[in-house]
Image (cartoon, rainbow, N blue to C red):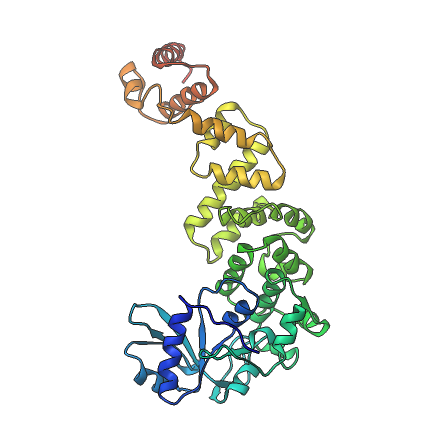
Length: 397
């Protein structure tokens, strides 16, 4: 089979690397996801190159190389423009002892290299010169039939348990049907030993595209407790329904907020703080989920307006919309955006000049004045001063 190779990036960088390798007498092929996605007419953002050249040979051929995984034959060649191309030496993997990495690797041939990979659709080689596709594992037939099949038997998943999550993502994102053997291996293979960093990489990728299908696969496979421990399985149908409303235009945190929102409030944030999630992302999620709960539970106008003026108001609205709650929320947000900035009627300095004393009471007065301003009860600074003086005389604070 031959295909027309696209021009432009990232293909031109891949051709550049392959040409250097082949001019030196080595084999060099495009391999893996870039070949799969080209055949599926999907966007290709980077290309990987498999080669017969060993790491020390690669270092001699390219002016700048990064040895990211020399022991496994994985090197990065840097183009003259500063872009990275991953080059992987053909290899045969030894025994996997930790459910993630082989104890040793032996540099080998292209045929052996594709047989150590995960799924047939990822085991295709593409000639960078004429676009011919080399298939040693039946990947072309499976790709045409939209089938997910493990290469050389189900044990391949237990060798590297991350392949379970990759397989579930491929099923969801590429609309594939797993073979009976492959699905059984996905269900039966435990995810013990996988780092939370790797799991969160899969969570992020899974929620980027077709999040409802991805989440359904995670839940149906029985791995929800491994991936998102605080989320109760009973909430899966509700989460799936809400995720179906997420669009490609949404903030990437919308889908994650829907999932985390389903976890019990008593445990969700303590769990998130222990996870390898950037603190800023957790902060945004907390504000969005808390704001959505405030509006969904019914609240005073001032409290509602404060949520709609918060930094995560748009995320709050999308979360509520996807959950099918508070249909008025988009209108409220539009009203606040149209109203523009609200200038406080009085400041702490103003209140101190009126006779108030520094301390917690001063903050409560300012908060009450702001609430009444947002409720429309206090219209201007004079109203606010009159109200404050009246309560000061009564000793209400």
